[in-house]
Image (cartoon, rainbow over all chains, first blue to last red; front, side, top):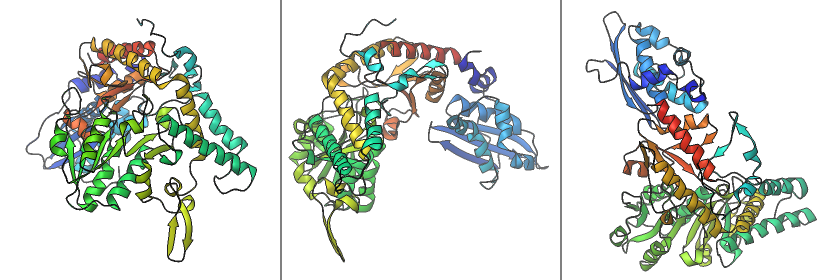
Length: 129
Length: 415
């Protein structure tokens, strides 16, 4: 494996080039948005919860580097179908484990942007992330 | 592959003066292409700062003893070298600051916030400024009600000089401009801009952070009223920079910081400031930094600023040619190397600049990615970010070849 393939693994590039759950979600009840001024990454999340407090659907919109956009796509795959309380209680390690790549402190911000947007959308107070 | 550059600088010999270039990063030889952010330091500069602390560390100006005299002599000697380097008439025209940002804030404070600017007065700037030459003027706009007017660029990144005709009016008090763009490398016609400012009695404030390290500067030929630059971009230490000012203007300029060296006398309720330039150097200055910058100036002058400029023109010409040949790569800034310096911004179709920098990083190549603290300029090009390679005296064509190979690998990853 060449050094650049270590970060840009097949699954990351796959999520970047073929994002899952991308686009608007008109009947969503929860929305969140944030950006990373460092790279100009931007992620918007829309979350629709069903009658049994489960995340029935989730979509993201945004632009930015491969790490930020792939991790947003992966995050939507993780939380789709998840009980709302589980999503609220989810720890960042769950996202990082799914990404499974070595990340510098700077790139960590890209990787966790969508995670913070989710918490913001679900109105989890800061500090409980 | 690289053809040999004309012998303008002996790069192999220069490289030997930079200890950091001997190390490996990520098991690869270091290819450092980020001197526009900060340059690497030659052994001579590192030794000079270490010498100060190891041999004659003392506070400047007031100590009676031998060490203090030595420290003062070296510190003031550095001021004289820098004055000569920029063509100042007298070393008193050189004020030591922490860097370009502090220098520009000091001018905005004295001539804007505390100075004669009134509501409705105008500050003329350009859309290619670094945030350090934008935000200080926003302070003046917000606190004094001054109006900021922006000179645009053309698509190649050259200033629209014709716009000055309309934008400079009788209300203009300050005209400010980057001597060289930190994103496009564009060299702006400072002399002409200063002339236009003076025609309406405005002062001209020049951000020379990207110019002073790379080309000869003559403040008197430019007729700049104030000119700011940083030591760390020109082989010197971090935390030291310069504010040049015309002597009659420095006399009228209020100090930003109170305390220490800037005082002549203090009484209950009132005080008198020290003489120029000391009235601007409140607090113990960065003595080692100033001495290190003096040695950096010696080093640059040893090579010759004309030779450095010529070397960087060759580097830039080669880089523009090699990168320009790669399909999917877009280059920004003037094509003519006579109009620009060795700051080369680019984008690659399908790859975000941050991902470009990450992939180059694993190959030991240091470039910058982002908005380069020039967001209005990014908006002008409708870009979130660019990748930026920048060259200096220790770079050669092989560094460009490494960059070109790296870009091709980025394209393979994102193909």
